[in-house]
Image: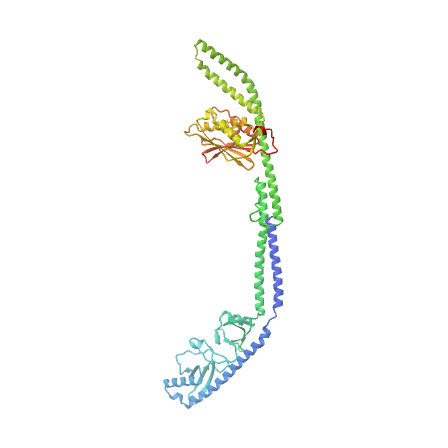
Length: 566
């Protein structure tokens, strides 16, 4: 599948997800968005009015206290005392009247606290004021009253008191600078700013108790009144609904996109594996798609069925290719053998007759030399031996080119292996070799030509002995075993091994020995092929040379002509 199709599917899924989630979220917000502000507003408005009423009443009470105190100061001749006495009188008045702050301004200057920097309190306003720009009086708001002191003092009495509120579950008065009054701990800054900007009913949890709250702006705009009441359970507002729906929409979009990603991976990963498998086959690598591994494992869909069919096709194509290669090799071998046969037949015919004449003549000369004593008979031995060697080569060529089918007979494998062991032990030229025969086969028959197989093992063991001619200990291991549906016989030696690729040693006339004909292993292969078996050569750890012969197990339906000869 191309990248373009994958991208189109991903974009389409994403757009569809966003549209569906947005529509559902909008509908849900509209359905759930019946605000409870109207029901809460009456309660909170009533609390606000109560706060304003209590502020007004507290202001009026403070005004009366100021007027009475100003009259008392005249009666006490307050300005006739020194500064210390004035300070003590002021403290007594504050304590007796429950006043938080008392100051007398005379000609615009404070009399009692001359070193404090006061913000001009102004006149009575029924609202809270900050007395100073810094210090302890800057953190809270106070009700302030101003009362002129009669007589010739030209002074004004200022009193300040923090109001007390009754029947208000939650109250906070604040301005842009901060909190002026609160009866509970409240978060400042962003929380209060949010309330003033949204102008909606909200809720807050204080001391594990839920409060419905709202901030009202004071008529003059100097500060805000935040009032609240304890709700039995939390209630969601319209703003909260909108926020909740937005968050849910984002969460749903992200969740669906993640789900879509994994679904896409689930769908596209098997397709990628299938595409990779097709590319491998196109490149000539006959590899099946692993169905027991990710991403094909337990997919259980049509793609897995396609993968099964693809693997079946790969197996069939691989088998067909292997059969084709085997047929090509067999045809090539037959062509070589046919050409060699024609060549050998001509050579054998042309050479055999002169060699026979030479051999007879050499024998007659040897007898004549022996009778007259002038020529030593041993001088003719080399001629005779070399002529015999040429005759053996021709005989070997005839054996190879004749390619007679072996006379196969049913034989118990243990008996056959024991026969080979006895025959090889009886060969005189093997007396200097240590032959180690071993077998794990206890039962089973095979179709075999004993005489032909004798020649095979004779050639292999002789080659092994010649390869180890420079070693003090020359050991040849011959081990037999039963594997699946065939017998295996391994012939191993510790010689230097063949100095060529293993597949070349079975080519006709190919030899690495000075006196070799290059036909011994070729004849071995021809005999094994006649038994429907195989012979392979290899080096193990660059120390051991091994020839592995594989012969099929005889089946009940095979030729039974050898039953009586077992």
